[in-house]
Structures are given as C-alpha cells and as structure tokens.
Amino acid sequence: MSTVRLILRGFIFLSSMLLTIPLLIILRLFGRFPRAQFAIYSAWRGLFLGAMGIRVHYTGNPYSHPALLVANHRSYADVLFVPSLTPVVFLAKIEIRHWPLIGWGARAMDTVFVDRSTKDSRRAARVALRDRMSHGESAVVFPEGTTTAQGLNPLHPGMFVVAAEESWPVVAYAMEYSDPDMAWVGHEAFVTHMVRMLKRPMWHVNVIISEPMTHSDPDQLMENVRKWMVNAIETLRPGSTQNEEKENP
Image (spheres, rainbow, N blue to C red):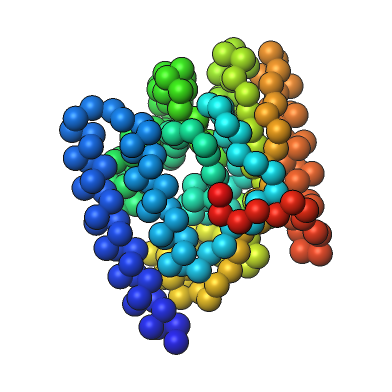
C-alpha cells in the first residue's frame, strides 16, 4: 500500500509542480503581480496538502494586514503551514535555490535567498524583504535559521531589527507535527525525507497563531516573540489540548 501511495502522490507532486512553475514564470514575464502569484501558490498549496494527506489544525486567525510572519522550523514543508491573508515573500537559505523542482518553485515565487555565513548576503536579504513589505507583502521567516526536531533554537535578530525600525507587526506561529519523525533534521537527504513523506499515511500539523506584536526595541521584540513561541510550543506537546481549532484556512 505504501508503494502505491508513493507512486500516486509522487505523480501528483511532480505534475502539479510542472504545471504551476511555468505558470508563475509566464506571469513574471509581464511584471510583478503579487496577488495573482499568491493565488496560484495558494491553489497549489491546497492541492498538495490534500494529496499528501496532511491536515493542518489552527488555533487563532491569520493577521489581515502585511506583517512579519515568523515560525519555528521543523522541515522545508513548514512554509505550507503558515497561512496568510496577504501576498507573501519567503526567506530561504541559499542552498534551496539549486534544489530540483523545490528550488525552481521558490525562484518562481520570487523568494529572497540568504547565505547566513556572509554579512553582505544577510544585509541584502533584509533590504529586499524591507522593500517587498513596504509594498504590501508579508515576509515569512524562520528566525532559527535551521530545523530542529523539538523545542526552539536561538533566534536570529535580523528581521526583528527591520520590524522594530519600521513599526511593523510581528505575528508568530508555533507548530508541531503529529508524527515527530516527519521533522527534517540532521544529515538526512532531501530526497530520502520526501519519499518518507510521500509514503506516510495521513498525519496532521497543529499550529497556534499569535496576536500581532510590536516594539521599538528589536531585542525586546525578539525576546517577546521567543517567549511566546516557547510557551506555545510547550502547549502543543503530546497530551496538551487546543481550543478554537480550525482546519486549513
């Protein structure tokens, strides 16, 4: 059964990506249309989650205005679990740019790539995100900078500085997988993990969405977000309950 599931889901994934990516590229040839781009992405996202048997259960509601959206990081799939009511721009590590299909899709979505090992790349990424947010897009950032199977790694301050300087709200997302083995950590190859996801029976992701947070001091803003995320992740541990649950907004 798992082999049949792998073949069927693999076909849906490949065919949907090969349809969506050229559509985004063609749209880009005529200029930047963030809302149309986001609509195409959202349609693909819904199809992919359904085909993969992944159900996302939300506590709280997405913010209705542009904001800095930050979340803890379990795998590359986490971008699918951060809902937004506004067009989004993603921040991703530079390595993803060269991944087959995933990297092509990221570039078609005008993702901002960053090499965290160089100060110039980090600065350029902040400038690019600042520009996109000033034009009404929300930035999706995973401030840990890397994945972890549990808990929360230290946060990188970069975009919190920009949010504090611009008085932009920060909305935090805390997520946990119903199957912790679905986290992508360590040295596991991307293809190996993707195959495990394609073969896995139905599973779900629990997500809590914060109220918007603001502060003129970037360090305090980051600390407020960190404390909220630590507490929210704790409530999502096995045995905890969630209220006001909503599925796949």
